Amino acid sequence: MKHENLINEYFDGNLDSTNQELLFNELASSEELRYDFNQLFAMKMAIGKDTAAFVPAISSTEALFANLGIAGTTSSNSLAGFWTLYKAPILTGLMATMATALVMLWLLPIGSGSNNSEKSRIPVVSSYSYDTADLTLELPEEKNNESNGALIQNRELNKTKELNKIVSVNARLNSQLNNLQNQIASLNSITNMLREENKALELSTNQQTNSELNINKKTMGDNPNTVFQSNFVEQPNSFSSNNANFIINNFNTYNPETSIKLEAALGRYFQNIGSDFVERNNTFSDNLRVSGLYNLSREYSIGLDLRQENFYQEFTDISNSGQKLIYQQQPTVYSASMIFRYAPEYLEFLQVRPNIDLSVGATNIGELARIGVGLDYYLFGNTYFYFKSDYTFLSYYHKNINFSSNKYGTHLGIGVEF
Amino acid sequence: MTKNLKNNTDSELIRMLRNDKKLSGDAFKELYSRYSPNIHAYCYKIFNDEQTAEDIFQETFMRFYQNVKVQEGNVNVHGYLITIARNLSLNQKKKSERIVYTDKLDLHEGEYNRQDRQELLDLIAMALELLEFEFQDAFILREYNGLSYEEIAEITGTTLNNAKSRVFRARNKIKQILKPYLKDLEKHFK
Image 1 (cartoon, helix red, strand yellow):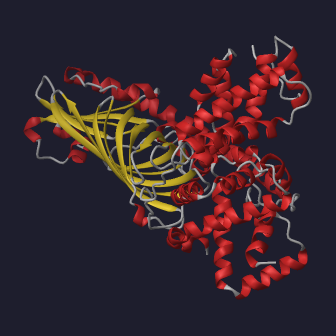
Image 2: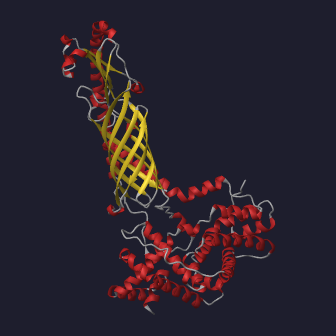
């Protein structure tokens, strides 16, 4: 039998063991034959994934049914078709997103963490006021030096939604401060008692969680036969593109010219917070980010980025009585921005694609601009993990005076391409 | 409301199509959903021209519907549909002049990825267009429609050995045509 025919028979799955041995020996010694073999294998693989050929245009189907007088495809059929074609990437994406979210919850000190004692503290708005004549004095000194006439007011708010409000301090109330300070002192003693109780409660909760983890470890240890393996193993000899279902079930829709990316991520921000301001603990939703991007080409894409995040703000004002006020707050905001992404192809390595994001947008407190760099790691055909660092600049106004804030963020997320 | 006929055999569906006025449309839809991917792939690959392929594809199912309603006896639906599509394609090929543009292909350098696969598919489609119909036909029936050599022989009206030989020769011819292009993609096969 000719060598070419041996290869053909092999790919058809019709080669007996004697001829297989002959073929393998020839392959080992002949580079030309290996080249032929690889060519045919590549062709077979490409054809096996040529899904476009197997999907009739919806317009064709509708025209055909209309011509035959048969009620056309219903939207539910189209939906079912969509689901059939896209269920693998959608489910993969959802599962990977959940896995990422769990990892992030575990990795990041969100809510309770090492800083358990701060859990109940929600530092929000502090304001300091002092005479405009003493503007050269350092703020911390102003805060601590009552003899200079400095007034301190710290407030802790219980509801997050109130963070967005700018608290105005009325200097005329200063005369009532002594009474308030007495009340605050008594409240502080109650608060300290409650904190001690909280610590004791958290300690017992942690102990309980640890014992649960031990139980889980033990359970895992009882299942030593767990085997991880890739869900698709290419076997040239048994390869077959013999039916459409096989191909459609392995649908890969990636088309770099037209595809859409959906991304979700959790992140952590680092902000330049004033030394006398207690940074708030981030909640799960404070770190949430979702984006949708449209690929303009293989390297460029544009899209929309939506986030819930917080910004540290520090800005000044002059009171009616001529005192300068400094406000500090860390409100939670919603932001929407347009992203422009550049992912240079020549930097791609080992399924990792570096990229850079530029975005401009707005929040409910001001305008922002971001620059970010990141890495997309293509885990499966159309699903990728990404790690991104970004720098955000926020511009906002208080009584027509412009102020700014900035921060760094890191994000770990998952993306799916359609 | 469309009745779910997924569990019915082809023969049952054909019976409904012929005799059951209520379920005739649903039976046809079910047959369409079973075989349209394969028939579409055949038309799409034979012509490599979307418009012509869609026309032949629609015409195939129109003829199938009209013929099968008035005929009697059992029908091998897949074979019947392929035969109709093949005859229509053959007639269309005779009518039209073949022009294959090879200069449209633009090979990218760089790592092997999905784009390369698409390029390879475009190359195969181009090479297919350069083949004689009998080789083209046999190759598509085997590689895209997954027919056995016996089925190909039956549909094309030739012997088993001849069918096999046509597929092998088609593969080899495609390889030969693609050789200069595949050189660029060679590193990805290793």
